[in-house]
Image (cartoon, rainbow, N blue to C red; front, side):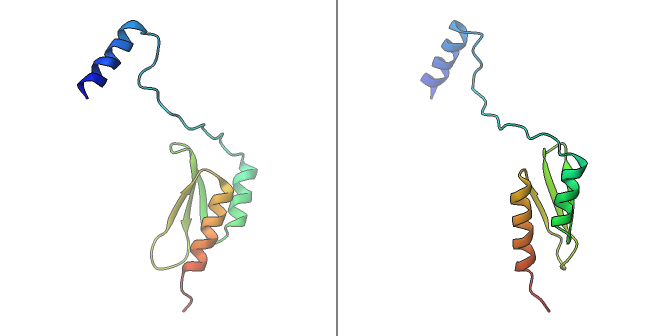
Length: 93
């Protein structure tokens, strides 16, 4: 472990312009338009769907069931699929 640290310091000293450690970054999704958000909301009528600008993903809060259910997802298609799966998992009285 000490060798790795010294090696990293050596890289920083010899190549200061190289970023270390390399940070893997996910591509940031763009903010959805109001029409896109309305379409996702219409597909998930049992849910309150919002765009969380801080987390950069959709948030769906269930309007049914005794327990609060919150689903996060960046892709609106995955969000709709997960909302439908959660609706089907709730037992019908």
